[in-house]
Image: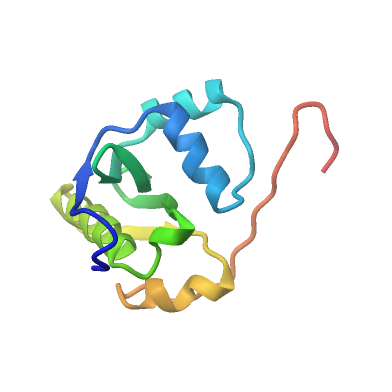
Length: 139
C-alpha cells in the first residue's frame, strides 16, 4: 500500500450520498439519490472501503440463492492499483461462500479493460448484453 494513504478499513455501511459520489467518480450512469437509497436497501451485501472517514471504494451484490450479481465495484481513481479492489472482491466472495447453495452462478458486468482484474478471481469472459431504459422512453 502506498504510504500516502492511511490504513484502509472495510465496513458494511455506505450512505446513499457516498454511493452516488463513488459511482460518479468512475463515470457510472448517474442515478437519483432516491434510487441509490433503494438500491442499497435491496442489496443483500454491501462492502465499502474507507481511508479514515473518506469512502474510497465499494461493491455490492444481490442474490436469489442460485445466482448472484456483483454490482458497483468502484474504487476512486487515485486509490486504484493499491489492493482496495482486491479487498472488496475478497469480501464479496467470502459473503457468497457463506450462503447455503449447491451451485451458484456469480455474474457481473465490467468494461473490457477490467476483465483481467476479475479473471484473477476465477471469472471468465462471456457474451452479455444490457439496456438502460428511461421511464416513458423507447428502446
